[in-house]
Image (tube, rainbow over all chains, first blue to last red; front, side):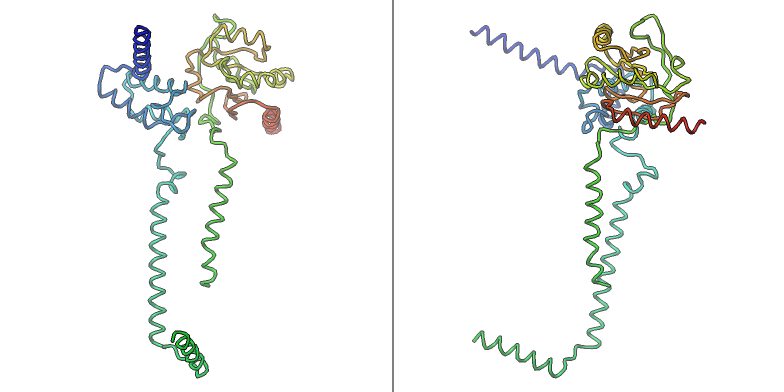
Length: 163
Length: 178
């Protein structure tokens, strides 16, 4: 019984070490390249599992792309070269950070545009209020005699109810 | 005038609702191919059934062809196989197979059992032609024109409807050439 538990425990231990090894198969002679590999794998999006980057994804295609990045790093390719290679094949979709170009201007500059628009609206509203205040202060509100009587009557009824 | 301004939120809401409504009917998995209207990548790979025969792009250029990416590990490929056989029987367009990241013997058994709609099969065991082509899963089907330019990419099962659309596209070219 004890032996069984022991073997089970060892088995569990062994299995977990195997699954860890699967993540770490990319060997680099240069620690700088390994760091770049991590960066690239985190900023490229997996075309198959669309909400994962290729570092996280277990899809076959993500594995292939990781292998390709490793090969290209070993062949001394620069980061922009590797990213261009991916975009050529899988389109802008693989980029988690979209490039700045006419199609993405609205995406990049839209928020600033909306901010300016909001500021403009606020200024416009404030100005309008100030103007309307000034105009009422200048003219005053003059009640006609009938209106004044109506107002008195209303105020009186309210007083009467309260007392 | 201020009265009309009160409708601005409603108008904004309608615009937003329009976009969201459109979003419901878009399939996010259907990515346009980055190689659309670009030449099919160069390659040099063995044929599936004759390992000694080396295939290149020149083997299918000169006429419009369908290149179908398939593998035995792909259940949807089994699903579309009957439609591929139908297409092959019409003799209207050659179907080229790209056997993607597969096992050679398993693929041969598959073709024997289910029938072979392909003129020949490119055996891409490592998936590197697939990578150049921007394949991210099987099945995918590419429509190439006579110059070997990729004109259309379909991701997923080829259905009767997809085949109709493909035929219309090819007919469209015919009228342009005449």
